[in-house]
Length: 79
Image (cartoon, rainbow, N blue to C red; front, side, top):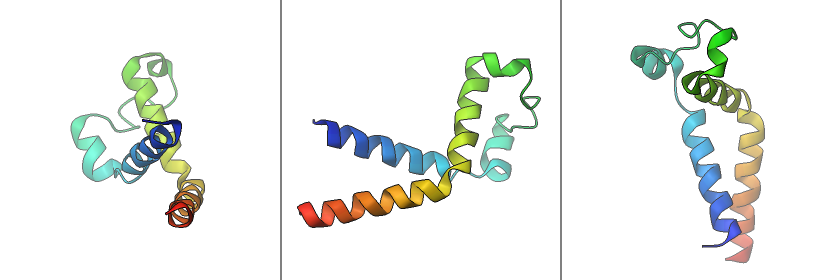
């Protein structure tokens, strides 16, 4: 397993987190951003940090699309 494989795995994980819907999936399980109290003291907990990471990845969808395109083209070229 090389560095490139690890980076591809992290990209796949970021893609999986980016498509999570807050209303349909996260809020039903108590992971909604409103239930955590926004950016208050709950950010210091592990659950708050994970929730912050989920929301950060969801806001970075456009750069994630660009990164997916670059990786797909590099995989086609290296073949």
